[in-house]
Length: 610
Image 1 (cartoon, rainbow, N blue to C red):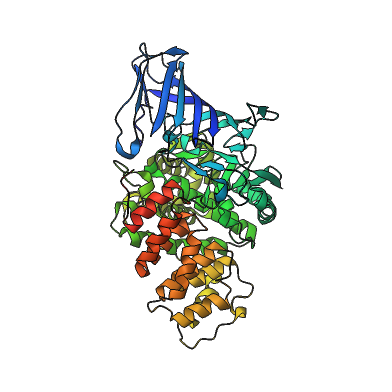
Image 2 (cartoon, rainbow, N blue to C red):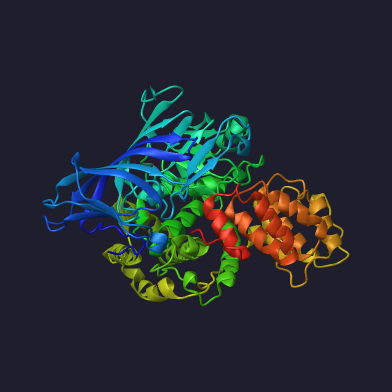
């Protein structure tokens, strides 16, 4: 089998449909109920057991076709969890489907769920629960074949005292009364999806329309602001994406804006993208996250990398589509390179952090014996983007635009590895009409692109949109420069970010006075935009402006998005370790478990509970 991060025997059995009848129990902070897996036999009666992934689960009963059968949970194997072995004494003929019913409850060691107390939500009225299953955390919700190489349709029957959203289409009129104040919420996912896209959230959630097939769902206090931030652009994004690939396949595209402890920018759960509240910044400057998550509806969700070793196929393609969507909306190709220049900087930082010879700086990363979360970085996103962008430029946009729908049609509802991608590309461009490209295509160093460590070859960027940012950054090198708010008049948030990134990279940091002047003159200290604020704080910490340290600590108590949290802790740790440790101690229960574990590693205080 080609996925080293599953213990399941999915070569012998493949999940075709999953029904989850689960109750959200806010008192015990657990999901409990019955999960029914329908698995198709891949052998002719030769496999006598089904092996599923599990992690820290409380399994009380397993039945095969409604009858008791032998089952056993074996010893834990690190991050891959504990395999569940289920006897199928007679095996099954190839193509036959067996039904496995599992009575299960999550435990307090579940890594996929975060439970917020009413105090951790904005209106303080109700508790909140949300899941994050990527990369291999679905196995801590229920036993499953937790690999992106297996796709299943899903039925959700979720009981909760609060509103539920899930990665399925809500069943019209499907909401029914449960016991007491509980309701049963029903959803269907008819497009087969991998386990990491299984998603649930429940809490005091209201929704409002933001487009022709879209709504935004969030806490009542945030609804108006979230609707304002998203409604102008949602349909534009959708139109642009459909033009580049082909029509949207999922029925609805909705956005759930989560409480601040959500660790990612967004999670592309189908039907309901889960998004960080940092995109609701009151200035419409951070909604490129939505372009990214929408693009995943084709790359990642419809066409999926078969294992985390080939994760770049999900993210590199998605960055490429996101940037094409942006360019289409802004009506200028320069926007692709403007975003790619910012991405290149993030890639350089990531590679420097790992070390340029590190395995995790390759496009295809060996995952034997590692936790995929540890290999998670900008590399698959930006290095992956640069490979796709290089291929686009090599064959020419007009030709590449014909390849895009071919690729996504050929692999729709399937999973693939890097070599199958290579074969698909070469196969498409071997057609007679592309004969003139033969020599160019022969030059592609597939091996090097997949396996070289460090930075990929740097393209010639169109710098027109960043040049004025660089010019202003140059001025900040002069100690006597007098800034004015008019310096950045009419700039987008992303242009200000490029300026701040440049200043952050100065050989000689700003003086304390300069740093304070930068923050005040350009309104960064008072900004509600976490992206700009955190970039400014990195400059202030480099300048060793001690008056900024408390602001950093405060921000770390307001955002849980790892993109900001981890680098801020690393920088704060260098200049004020005691404050960094004290801040982490104060807010660690606010962070998502995945974020908490990684910050513990960053600060060198890793607990041994994992």
